[in-house]
Image (cartoon, rainbow, N blue to C red; front, side):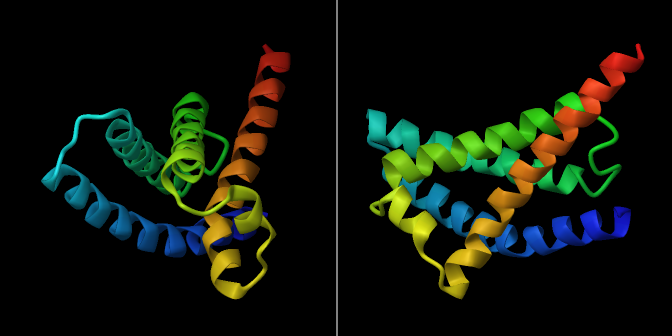
Length: 134
């Protein structure tokens, strides 16, 4: 089971790394022409929260969902919030249309989000079990 979960995280890190590199480019473009408006701060926030989500995926490689529960939950939730900010306010695409697309590129792009949600659920279940033991 541990091998399977580690494999899921590693496979999710591949497209997430590509998105991370695109985020660095986007961050550079946002900061090179700052507007100091609400859309500007939304774009910067979504990118920075996306960095946190990527770090949360990397943290999963050490101990998966069995250690550092609150830290991993925080970083993974931050990544999901950054993704939501991006999809609702920054992206020109409709979230529902993007979720319903089934071509390979979109499925690969959705995988880090699905893995994050899966591990948020696993970490939450593990936290409940730990609370019951105490």
